[in-house]
Image (cartoon, rainbow, N blue to C red; front, side):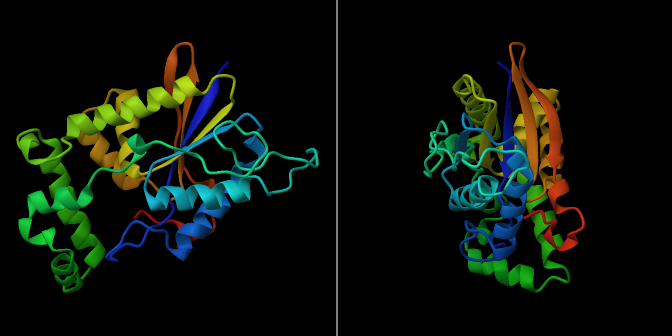
Length: 251
């Protein structure tokens, strides 16, 4: 039976805070809107998986709660609640698979600019820029290029090739877990999604970097799984945020 893996990027996180790994209030709202939009697809046999990061779990909680509480036309009164691996009709946490975790962005920045290993120093430097977000994007793009270039692989705890393989392994595991399920909801980050799309399209490494910059918070990328293997179906869908420019964010 064919299944769809829904790769959901976490809602907006606490950009610029000492602890980035938590959703902002905007991120929570984004996640709830996504859940309501996906509600017509939800079924009792669905599987939910999320990475081990707090922002992944918070996105899953908000999204699944909205998904399974949104009334559906012509639907039975009793709907399964957020799944516990295979939706058995009880509210429980999704399966945790750390292979869906984001890369270590702090290490990547610090290897590029060692002085920025001190987060407070980085924040202070960015605060002096005319456009802090643009300054960070420029810094991060250069750091990512260094990480993915291959020349300095020995300096990273997880070089780019190892990260890509981890993401492909996570995708394979999700596909194998599908069984008779129609939907697999995966709550993750932009890096794994970009790496998987790059893999499915057989695009060069540099393309993954470009893809990651376009991914919207609480956007969904769908991968169709059938006998022929996984195929990209949709990329970075975020129609649930249309008309709400304040909710279209990228960090």
